[in-house]
Image 1 (cartoon, rainbow over the protein chains, first blue to last red):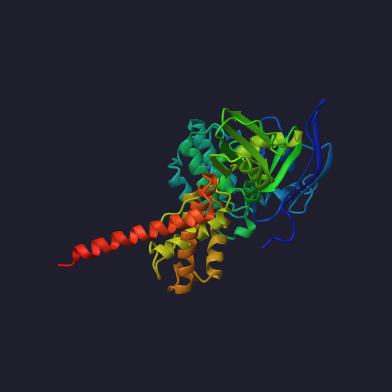
Image 2 (tube, rainbow over the protein chains, first blue to last red):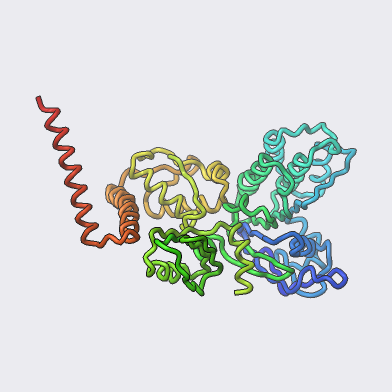
Length: 299
Length: 137
């Protein structure tokens, strides 16, 4: 088990394109064996960060370690232990599915033929077909097979399911859960960047939300769902409550809906003191937390 | 046994699984010696992290609810009656809590709530007696 040092360490990363700060002082740590979500809007700096991890881009400043190694100096050592599925998948169009997998396997020390056969069957990919004839979904499936068969310690997924149909998305995630996480789970770390958060909800152990190149929120998923709550209350008549501690307050007639950030007990007590007819609290999903996290910055 | 996850419940996902297996054991949906779903297919079906299911099973094992037989999987242990009793109590406590919260919102005081519970118990009692006496020749 490789649990002693974090799989990914990013400290004060900065990268600009011309005058635009794509990433501006980002820090995060991904422990081994975890599934780590990297959430942000389009243009928040997710792909830039991932490219710096893979030495596809050079950071302007900051400190990056993958498996404790510096990507700029030990790119090959790092890449032999990870696999990457980018948002745009491209293959050599003249190769068949079989050729492509053999080509990918030729770069790897380890290639699990059983998993390969399983996944080809599961995705119903024809191994004699040219990659130029594959649909977008099939290309992503082929990329996923290529990423999982070497059984890497770290799987980096950059917006892997955007633009795919719901069935392919579901299969993709099930495959990451099943095929990839089998074996020694302590050596199976996933780093997934996405804005389709709901689909990955159950997979995510910890996450960082990035906004304009900076970390906005880093939390454990269970702790986050415990901290962010939506509270709804109905009163006999419309009230003008201050509810100053709430992240947001929505009023519509006798109904009040508020978002709480760690202070749901105090807010519930405040609402209760005004004798509501109905009072209910529920946790926010990670996607709702992502949307609400913008409010935490101004608060 | 049907397991399902509610991300809005505020209970950590692995604890939801622990509670549901305990309830399945208490209600008889899962009997001693019966297997639990294997970790990988269950994780895929619920679309949760494999570690989450493994953590739930580890917790159930440490609570003495299930046992792992190497190479075969996880099975419900022969009923510790104490556990089953407390799991049954847990089930009822949840329902009672719901009633308490509802009573609170409707401004029904504790004494009135207790009186209502007593009244309902008596009503069920009478119903049972009535159906018993009907069965007698």
